[in-house]
Length: 450
Image (cartoon, rainbow, N blue to C red; front, side, top):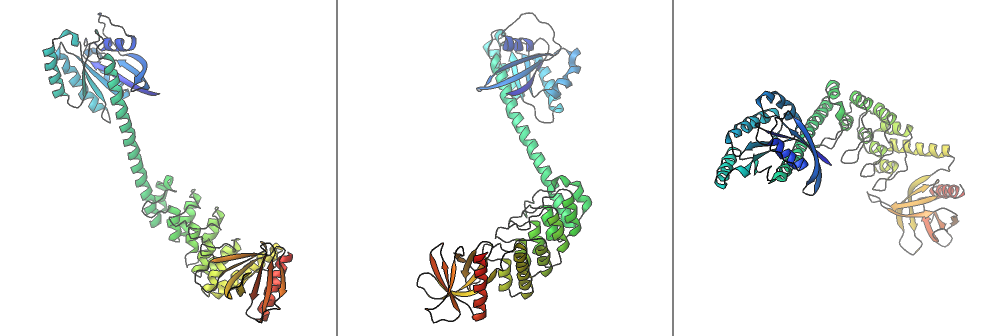
């Protein structure tokens, strides 16, 4: 339930207490006793929404004027009351309005109330209404009678409506202000990172994981792109998100691995702080894919030594080894092949194999050159489009309970038959030469038996 603090202000004797007493207790008294700030509380409905209002009945006498700053600071809305049968009491609300406007940081909601309308004629009411609306054009004006109970509830409903609207406006203004401050601070931390200023970064360290709206990068991603070892280490030590990504889905480790410079130490630091060494960007590339693509042998070596997965295919269905072969980077090709062989040996698996073969499928079709990838661990033989720059996976042959046999019915040389008993298909496969054929047959047989 929403709660509001309201003050009822005005000169002495204008009927402030009578209005409040009539509203809260449905009582009215002809006796007048000067008030020294008396609180009231009531729960009621405003536009079918329950609210709780604390109403401060303030002193009107000049000897109590020193009490005003306390309630002005606390209250969210003000009912400014004058007596319609004595327009000299308007002077008091003019003075009070000025004090309120000077004392409040934001514009305070106010409702002007002309009380005791039961004591004047209609013509006087019209003249009074015009006078007040000319003097207070921005405030709601209500003529009321506490004695006759006329428009009393309306007075308090209107001040709640005004206060509710103002409170929402203030909350939104504060939210926008904070958002702008955070945005400016975030902007500063991005600039500090670009310039490599640790002192400036520390001033805005709470924004260390903010994302730059212009570039989509966090400070760590900016530092990684700049290959700034010292700033990267400083950001990591202060809680930077090591796996945050940019708009391409690249982490700091992807970015570092995509550089041509020696970035081995940074790779070590990022992985030590929890970087996912096998994370894939939006194009399906792992860090070692990026390192292989830019021919950074040192980065490939470091990633391999840290245990990266060399079997992951990107969205073009290429492993890092396939990319290196396509780029004809034979140093990285040899490095990755050795790593795969060593891994298979350590795992107790038979040697895996990759390369081109010519195949004819289980139904009659032309011979086609395919790129084959044998996975001993998964007991599968996957094949891809052959000479196209972007290989696409065409199928998978299961080696579970598969059998191999010689090609006795075909005149082509260096061929063998692979019977996929799981999918009930038979494949005729041809290697480049007899030695290559024997290597494939031995490797496939080892995979079948493993």
